[in-house]
Length: 360
Ligand SMILES: Cc1ncc(COP(=O)(O)O)c(C=O)c1O
Image (tube, rainbow, N blue to C red; front, side):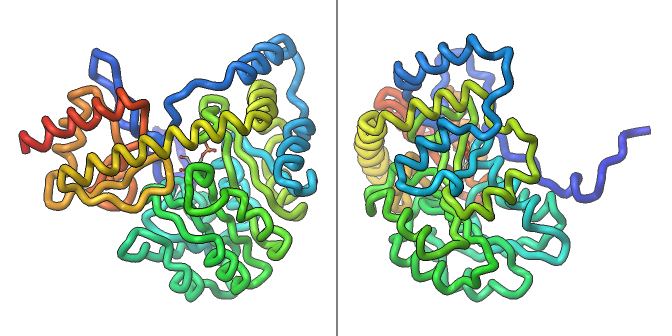
């Protein structure tokens, strides 16, 4: 006899883990939108210092980290929620706000965790296709909001298409959404975007109490191995998501690392600049090879493979030790998503791609 699981649990899709890893040489990992640089030296020191206290539980209110985030953005500490990665906050929001009969609206393709939110709660997921440039169609999203809607997700820049919307459009959109609907603006990649100042979304919080700005230490700060994300939000939202989770969601090392990392905005700026240089390089090289890329505002490119066989491109790259994401796993066949690595890694990706494309 096998174990019995709820129908709801069985309906939750598996998070598409990156392809691994039979290659024996040096792997080039460009599948998970990580940064190629290790943590800042001061962050490592903070983690090492925290190691000595591992016999204690972490601070359940993560006071130092929440204060530093609040100071950084000029918001109230009561409006800073933390999570074991920003995914944790998304899942907690679903648990706190969704149930059978409720609806969640989001664009598709978008972040592959979003389908979990409806599946795990029995709510209905309403998905709205991206426009022909791979951007959110906010008008169409707005048309799907009704009395049953509890959450709207807006991913800006969007994963996997890397496209971004100007903050004014988002401001106008949030103003049109009824106040009882939480608009979660997922800005996991916002620091990489040069479209506008990444902090331009912060003043929107004052105007729209139903807005949640979701950010993470996983991307530009390079701390995805520790899992820490945060939401700038109303106190209401914070209490709601805290209620449904265990008290110690963010571990002690993650708290220490993030609290130090946020003090080093010069390092953030350096990473943003290096990423922008690699973005230009990779996008130009892809276009030179006749491939179509979306307008990237993130640390990755979304590449259309045209009528080339996506699976053959993926396996050709992985046989050469280069791991990228297949479009099919991200909701759109015939594409790949490639994260920018170091220049050396990007060059290895491009030369592997040349070999694969030549052999198709
Ligand atoms: C759009 C988006 N949001 C959120 C996350 C989650 O990041 P984390 O849980 O590591 O904070 C990711 C990770 O890839 C992402 O792409």
